[in-house]
Image 1: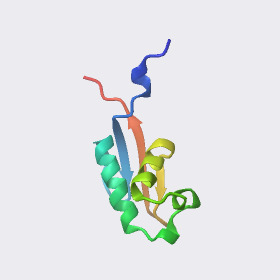
Image 2 (image 1 turned 45 degrees about the horizontal axis):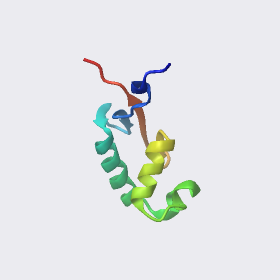
Image 3 (image 1 turned 90 degrees about the vertical axis):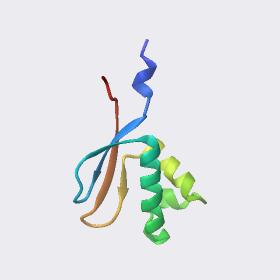
Image 4 (image 1 turned 60 degrees about the horizontal axis):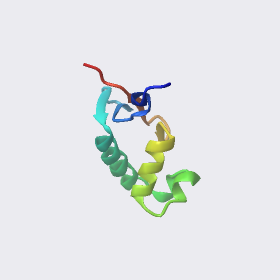
Amino acid sequence: MPNSIMYEEDYFVVLETNQPEQIISVGELHEKLKATLLKLNTEDLSNDLRQFDTVEAQVKYLIDTSCELDLGPGEYLQWYAVRLEK
C-alpha cells in the first residue's frame, strides 16, 4: 500500500527566467502565481485559464494540473513538487 506522503505537495522547486532555482512552500507558490497572473494580459492566457472567473481559481487550476506557465518567448516559470527530508 502506498504511503500517503507520496501524494503531499507542500514544497515546490521553482525555475524562472534569469533566476536561481528556489524551493518554496505551496503558499508561496500560490502567491507567486497570483502575482504573475495579475501582471499578464487576459488575452495572453491560454484558453484553459481564461475559463475561470477569478485569479484564485486560475492559481488553483495551475497548481493542481500544471507545472509551467507560458510567459512568452524566451521566458518561463516552472514548478515541480518536491519532498523535503531531514
